[in-house]
Image (cartoon, rainbow, N blue to C red; front, side, top):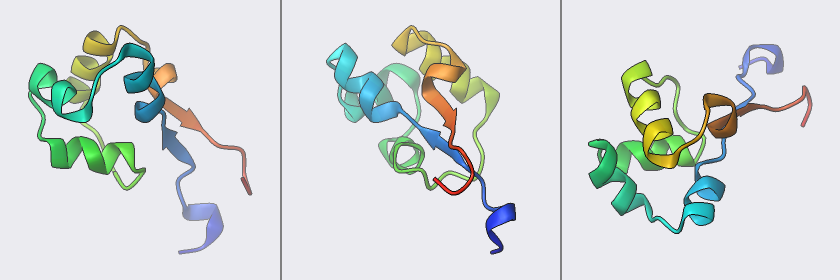
Length: 76
């Protein structure tokens, strides 16, 4: 895939979980999303995320979307 077509969105889920003392398994139970799907998101392999999932994660982690998803600068 040409670099200009690659997405540059990264997920800060690890950092947010650590800051709140939660594990991925605990978040999964609280949000109602499988550990496997959260792992895909956490490891920056997700191609999409449902707004309902994003809302649930942000509610549980008491954060904003911009705290969870960050756009890297080009070439970074």
